[in-house]
Length: 145
Image (cartoon, rainbow, N blue to C red; front, side, top):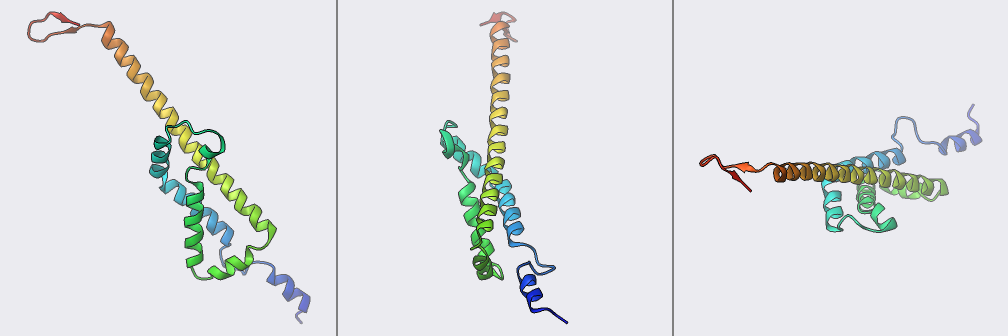
């Protein structure tokens, strides 16, 4: 015999076999962020790499979250997701996802900055070596400056 309160309790949980919209949203956002790496780096370059404070942390995060949210709504069951979002816990999940994306964005930017520093160091070593050793002309074999 089924208890009426049991069916109410069961309705609070996600149905078996269906993916959680939260996890689908999280995975979609992370995938979009990975695929938008070039967009992120272009925005970072346009900003000159010296954006102060919180603005630097969210070059692309808001766009990625909005794109994924729109994609999630267009899927089957989109209105159901909106109805479920009213819970305060879900807002905390969205903030957690946003923080994950910010961390990933910072990781990409940090990796890019390390790459730039390495390139600059290599270039300065090459230039220093070039200035230290004069070139020898292959035609007349005289040192050139």
